[in-house]
Image (cartoon, rainbow, N blue to C red):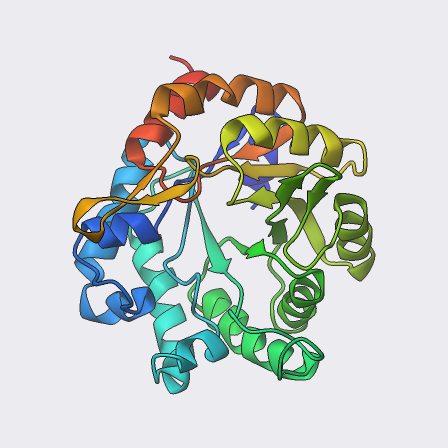
Length: 294
């Protein structure tokens, strides 16, 4: 990662865009398990990574967003957690070029901690530890705990990752914009999230992804910049999902509108930037033209 930090000192680092919507375009059925494709359809996953690197991404995220044991359990695959995450890391690494990087994606369980749900923090930590261990063994360059809508869950993932992995850890929360400001689904504000995640230790970068479009992400990054000196990550959605004819999902923000806000996101303080739901390799190609013009 020495080259990563050196590059970060020179310019904004460009991440990839959405994985899930690209898998659906490749034929993943609605309700299917994306992580299972790491062993059943590795060529499809590999092709998505390849296209993001060709578009100009400096780093891609593994196809392991829902790869924790609890989330995999909804598909009856909890016993294959290590296998599927190790495969995710291996596939992404196969597409790397010199000077590029792979982040191990760690997403939410989809469940809730007590008292809202049935799980103890210990159970979340155990589930995340297996995933983080497998991604690390698969030789990703960093771990990306992302799309966290509950600060307590984000802290569980961070604690688990620290215990089993020596890799740099990044954390991104997902916020809604309300009349009172930006808050997670569980009511966690920006200042609280940053303070408690930083205090937990082991962090190398923090930020936000998903939910917000690129216009709203500007204001959020401005607010986050006031609260921390850590490198900031921004990965906005291409707007909101809309169910179209044939049960296909489209997103409300067109590419021209999306990319016009990228310079302002960077100017507001984002050091690492990419796309989330609805973004494609073409979004990343357009962003690369802004971040690293020839």
